[in-house]
Image 1 (cartoon, rainbow, N blue to C red):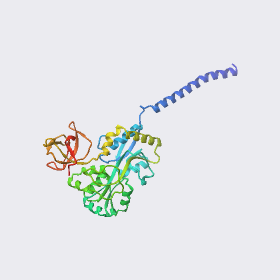
Image 2: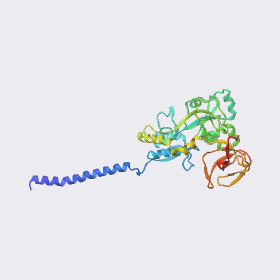
Image 3: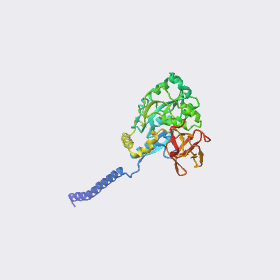
Image 4: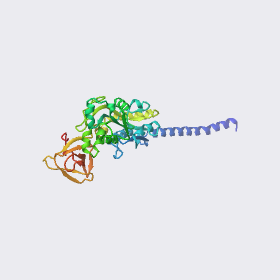
Length: 361
């Protein structure tokens, strides 16, 4: 056999093998493209750092609270599978900065956090300054706000006006959470606490001392900024410091493509019915005064958490502590705090039809 024949035979053997290799590579590439775009492919799991901020971020709630529900819906829509890691607020920015988590929430974008990146707002809240009753007249008369003892919640971002006051205040006490700061306000350890109106009111409503609660949420005459939203509810009166958008916070090295996808999801969900229930839970004041009312003027039935019923007189003053209904003994009921009568100070549940707002004290 000549050298030419040998070369031809080698080529005849090589060409089919080369074609098979090309087809194999093309098939693998096609499968990879399908898998990459397959909507059934498992989503990327991401860890999200947060802290307890009842009732809006609540580790004891099955769904984590309404703001957590919003974040979870947006992340899922963006193709991610969130795992929420609850800790102390002061640790959230550090964990984000060190890339120990994908993001932290719900946080305010401030000048002090310029090194981080933020999502579009998840929801907006009214931030107010709560003061003790004994401080009200002094502040209204022009007392220097920096002379007050302020409660600062570690890990919180504050409006510029409140930050300037606290930075100049002669006394500032640090607290790990909003409820801790609000309890200190009730107990007289601090004179003022800046917090979301809704979260602060909910924290105060959880306190056992109804009389104390009724006197600590009184007006402050000094507000650094007005919100273009309705005034405080009947039972909660405080000066508005600012309207703030709560956001997801990312490190400077975060994946821009993922951030854009989440922003798109938050924006589209904001006008959809999917956010409806959760958004209503954040925008409706969680605390309102009222009375229990019976159409015939007789007793109103209220139940405890185990469904045990007891009667209370029609006209009994109450505090609605949460406008999210709960299923108690197979009935959709609302939680109230009894402010008068034999059950005074107790937490009970009752039907919506039995609640009349605006007539409590």
